[in-house]
Image (cartoon, rainbow, N blue to C red; front, side, top):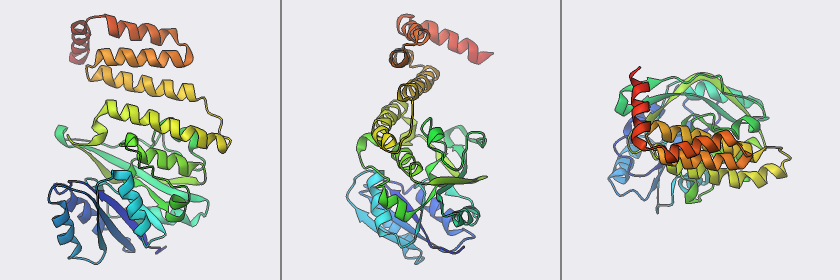
Length: 307
């Protein structure tokens, strides 16, 4: 299969990481691709770096636009792509050389609109890497699983351009920053099947300035995503217990807040969760985290971590 793949990369102040990302894509075994770099109003020297990279190979196409956020930049790139397939990568993530070679054959099934893979999680500041399991990866009609949690990383996804444009996959609402890709995949899962390669074919890099590192903003963004997808899912006759989905989301973030020592915020979040399904246990847990002094919770947490 030698269909042209357009790799869309939004760039915003990414000069520190971008060259490594581009080099990993240029090293692909599958050579029928173009790289579309969308400079989204960078204020560093990203524009100069992109221009110098584009001068070295005709595979790189450079576009400059006013800052509008990552979703708007992705839409801008998709509209200018020549390929029938769009692959996504962020400005700091990396691909393994065999990524496209292993993913593209799965599109021979015309019912498949998106193909993804596993991704190595690289925590730069901790000097630690993790390879998530494939226990929560699904193929076929994946909406019921995907609505629970985003099951794959954006840098692993390849989708049919026609479908992305037909459903207006990426919503440029700034309140979705960090989860605009999840909403796009949810929209796609309403109109096509998904498939995946059970291998880690990319590296998702986590560092101090990742937007997804800001848990409170991500929490709010995921709630906005659910509000937007609910009416669309209803139109496609998807039966979902939305209160349960939102409750589970709140509990997941409450536990993250506890881990980060944000005990009062965790308490408020448990209380919000309890009201969605009238869960008294969550309510009690929430009030405990709000009432009990923080130094006690910190002492308990420290003791547990030392064991």
